[in-house]
Length: 320
Length: 296
Image (cartoon, rainbow over all chains, first blue to last red; front, top):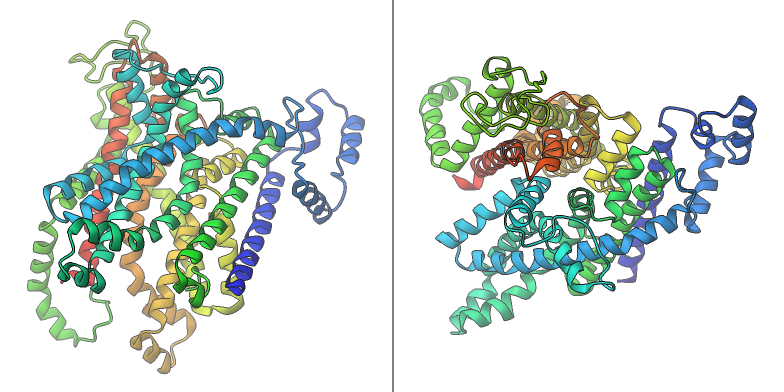
């Protein structure tokens, strides 16, 4: 077990270091002189040189990388060019909003997908199964931003049931917060639900065809008991991994959803940063997102191995 | 399956068997109506993209100040937009943009990903370790965030959005190819070809690649719709195709400002993306079942 843990953590560390290398190289590849970006358009050559020396831009690239990495590990990702606020502070302010959105979306996705997937698997090849599959295929194919626009069109513009956009803090106005969060969360959750439902169905079908399930049935146990007591426990294990891997989709989806519903979260921040050419902010946001993804999947793998002793014995899950 | 699936058969016998086999293949294909419908619709969209100049009833770019945000009529089937342009013509031309972005980005991903995956899976050891760790790192960036980051570096345009989506999709192909190669290298026919003295390049190109081709094809069919949606998203955010070039994503971006007065502007471009993506997914699902040997 310890062996597995050490191996898994080592791999994640390597991945993280490579991520920092990719982000650092990526930002260096942006055309233009970073000193000019920092100094503004009206700086003269002497001013530019001063900035280059101040920010260490004259040092060799590996030295610059190491310095940047050391600072990043201490939580210093530089300042936003536009607001002069520390990047970490800016992100930390936006993060809770996106986390709330993502959490709601996750609840909606799981709430729809798991029951539907189980039901489809039990009633395999019936009308219900077909219908559930059709809905899930539509869910994968529908562009989330169009779904969002259509929801605004019908629920806000036509029926005036929900406010079209905006955000209020839950602490200030709980009801208003929920009213404004429900549509974006549904849009973000719908795509995830579609993927999750298919996986649940496949995984449950596989488990339900196992010998021990046949034994349980032949013992005369009720279907309810067989499905929920015997099959579900094993059937849901792969779903946890899929959930971890889908976190990236959720983070990417938040960018679009927040844009449509004008939710001032993490996703809107990155788009604004791109438009205002606020490179330190873009760099920080991308680095934080990728690192979060690695961390989440590390946690998923570790918890997975705790749940499933077979993995622990065999070694790393991604060893193939 | 294709004749190159490794079953050794004398040339003459294969020729004689090919006619009934082809008929059987057709019958098997037609047994999946949703997949057939999907393939047909994809084909229609392809035609629409190619024949856009003839199918469009008007100039997709010319503005007309006397026809601003008019509801659908016979003259303007899908209505007009905020600059008086014909929405139908813009949707038709938008198919070209979407197809271009969807198909070329995935071709790029295949062109880079498949050879890299082949090398990693074939040579294993250090090469494999280096490639796979890099792939893992690359995969840690959420697809859309990576594409946004790349567009930031490259600058917004259709070509750059296509390149960005292609690069973001590449690691999937490296992983998939490598996994498939690992499974194939152990097969007897590869081992015996090797025993007969086949060189590395010949092994990879003649013996391994043809056998993993169908799995790669299925993956391509299901990743093209994702790429199409990704282009629409980038354009919607203003990071892809730049106005006035018609793109479904930019059209939806404008449409969102006029939902109260001109809702038709939002219906058609979105419906087009949805139909195209759904058809690709239907066709891809069908293809997967069709190429699955267990299905015989």
